[in-house]
Image (cartoon, rainbow, N blue to C red; front, side, top):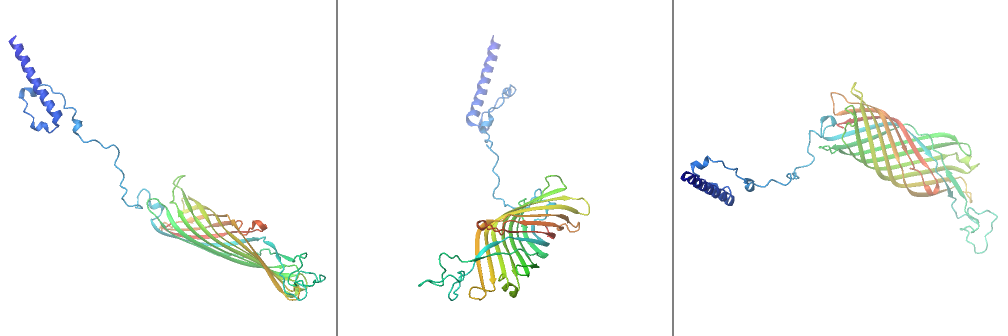
Length: 392
């Protein structure tokens, strides 16, 4: 009995000391262990539950991943986004030489009023049988008599082959951002034909002038259909200036004996600005470093069409030669489609160079259309194009 009471007293004292240490740790934290009373050696052999909850004193974990460092610079080279096969980062240039044959369709036709001149006695456009009443102004025809008009319309002659260069310079950005480029192109062509006019042999001549400027963003090449294919997309704006004219000339004596018209001329100009885009697809042929490539380019500038109609006659009401003209204008969109198909070659010893040779066709709609007057003028161009690219 005395032994049992002694064992219960020892267990009671041990439980009291354990509870006191746990309370001190819970109240004062981990720092209380350093100042707690030493534990007797015999109590260290007894089972002790784990020190819980110790996580209350640990720092709280972050609720989300740390934000990205937005202060780092952009447009830095990236080995994954800028592989060498897609071209070096930096400046690039491109020169196209087109050996082209333009075909002009000129269906411009419009009546040109005969001018009222100060002919003595009877104004131009009034039959001689019409007599002036007292007080009538001879410089103005009677209201019942309308001034005559001459319909001016000249077909286009055949245009000669011409050389049309295009220059492009740009900068390729790192990190797969593509490239920015500026391009300029011009074309000038003319031609003449010997034809039979209203009064006999005549000379028909035409000319065509084109100027374009592009500001483009182009994507990097990538291969959506496999390692032998590559694709490039280009987007931007295009400025267009187009001028063409046609005129017919007859000998003065032959015209005087017939229709009296020895010169007729029509002019057309279009100036516009609009969106432009292109898609270029290439397929490596896996021999001699050749690649088959095709290009589809589309633009639709919006601008102003201005037309002029002119004629010169050998005689008038007072027997002297005279000339007349009229002008019209309106706003119009002029779609442009250009296609190229050919082969390019990249020398193995000079991977930053590429040469291209192929065929080009382009069609220009509505550059000579005036809807209120139903006039129409357009042209298309085809021929050979040669290109040299550097670091492109």
